[in-house]
Image 1 (cartoon, rainbow, N blue to C red):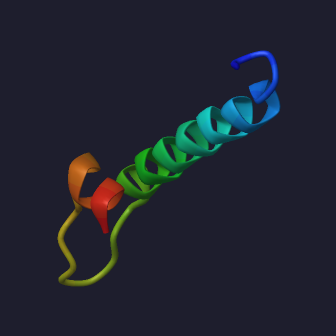
Image 2 (cartoon, helix red, strand yellow):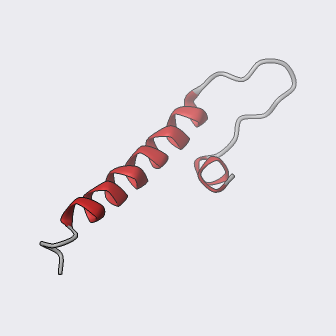
Image 3 (tube, rainbow, N blue to C red):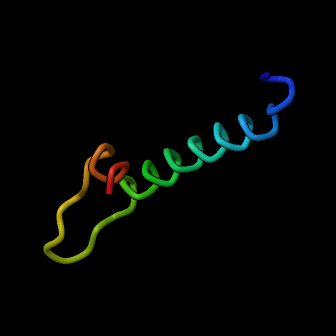
Length: 46
């Protein structure tokens, strides 16, 4: 089954990795004004 759908599984894993990388980059961006810095988990789930 994995051999038949390996492109789909690879795409899902790559998408999840990019989602996490994006959330990590958002937590590392400097915030301006009175905004507070979000945690990794808040960025990941929102």
